[in-house]
Each structure stands twice: as structure tokens, then as C-alpha cells.
Length: 139
Image 1: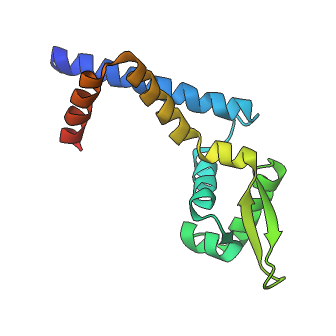
Image 2 (image 1 turned 60 degrees about the vertical axis):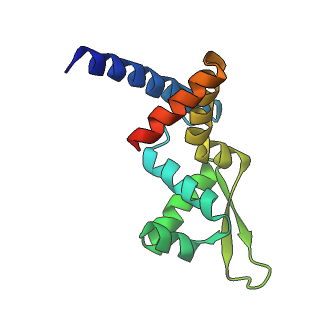
Image 3 (image 1 turned 30 degrees about the vertical axis):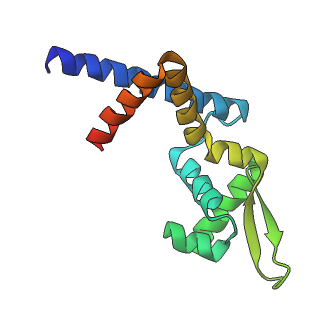
């Protein structure tokens, strides 16, 4: 690897490290330092879809209803979700995120926002514009 690429690697590695530390901080604050990536993914799906039933969550995640029931029961014990009975059909329950569940589901996004904030605080307007232009070239 060339010297410049190695330097770029180190810079990005540090940015990823800062983001990871921010995410881990959120998980620790929630008392869930051992939560899995898969569980976070499911919480994000619930967060993104808002009003989601067991059947809908099974379809979205391509899991069986028993698997979803088991997962939701774990989340209930972790105080990440609660079930809300449908006012239209008492047989249907919606899975809703608790405040804790929302914090976990949005931890990665919030961590990225903290990294961006740190970058914005370190750069002037022209440097921010330059960084945006550079990053837009690589995506």
C-alpha cells in the first residue's frame, strides 16, 4: 500500500473508531452492551416501519412467525418493545419500540451524527464544502 493510502486508511480507521465508541456508549447507557448486530437490525426494522405486526415483521425479515414471537419476547424482557392491541381487531398486536428500543435502533445514526458534528467543529465552511465534494466523488 502506498504511503498516502496507508495514511487515508488510518484516518478512516479513526473515524470508524469514534463512531463505534459512540454506538457502544449508547448500548452501555441502555444496559445492553451484549446486544447482537442482528437484534439491532430487527429493532431498526421495527423503527423504520413504525406500525408493524408480528406477521408483517416476519415477512419483512423473512423469518417464521414463531421466530418473530421468540425475538419479540426477548425484546420485551430487555424493555426494548411493547405490544399494543389493535383498536380495529383485538386479535392483532402491533410491536412498538420503547424509548430504550428507539435509542438502540438509532444508535448508529446518532453515532454518525456525532462524528459529523466533530468534523464540522474542526473544519471551516470551505473545508466542509471541499470534503463534501471529495466524498461525493467516491460514492
